[in-house]
Length: 285
Ligand code: C2E
Ligand code: MG
Ligand code: MG
Ligand code: MG
Image (tube, rainbow, N blue to C red; front, side, top):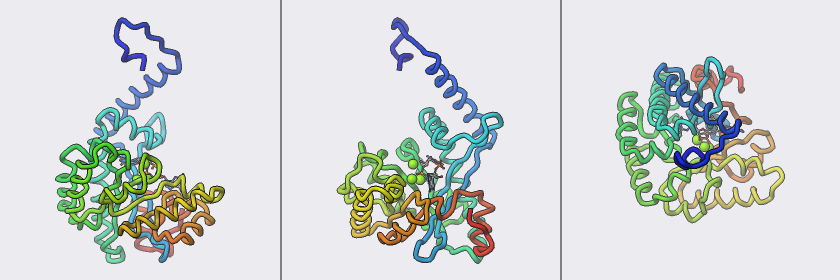
């Protein structure tokens, strides 16, 4: 980045670059404000047991609707948050909101007591040292069991720090909380990796599921991942199934769990609550 080359260097900004810098700074300051003013929300996307066709849990996904910009793409503001340290308060906000919401749902007798919410954790949070105590505090505060919570971590988090990562994963699991390897297949992972790291769940990236229709390769990769993970005692969730054909394929391959627009879109908590309490009347969105 030109800016970092030092004062005496000849630095060229073209208009587009300056635009990106400005909008990044704007995003950062607006995001800081949004966090202070409680303007972020959380949506929940059901994760479905494909044998039964019903949600067994959900993933919590951060949402930001800005007065001027409208809805800001989640991956975009998460990146800004990760680059600026705002991910720590953001992550805590989402984790607490997810636990509080699930605590409310579980008061209803219709909701299975092992229903879970799965929360994304960024590298900075994962290695912060106080993730585990914070998670423990949330379970206590909202009277959840460890089985009600899952934490999703992308494989790139783990790659350089195997030892430390394994230790933290162990501490999370000691709370009874399951650990999920998110977006599996997009990073530098190899299958042998699965054996070294003690994840409970693998979420296979949607690029493989969406590649099913035209790539025989995707099918073979999915078959291999499912076989090995299952042999190692891990659960496998297929992410991003959109079409009925993709859903049929992942079921035929033997996937037990799925998450994708073809099942349910992310939804507000009130909508998921009515889906869980009146499954037949809630419309699938
Ligand atoms: P992710 O953890 O892999 O979450 C799944 C993403 O795929 C979500 O995007 C979801 O809306 C989208 N998705 C679900 N089903 C389908 C489908 O059938 N087709 C397609 N094309 N997309 C589908 P979203 O909500 O935009 O989030 C993007 C990413 O941002 C997440 O990917 C996750 O890495 C990150 N993220 C979201 N919320 C949080 C959070 O609270 N904390 C952290 N650290 N990261 C978060
Ligand atoms: Mg995720
Ligand atoms: Mg994912
Ligand atoms: Mg992701």
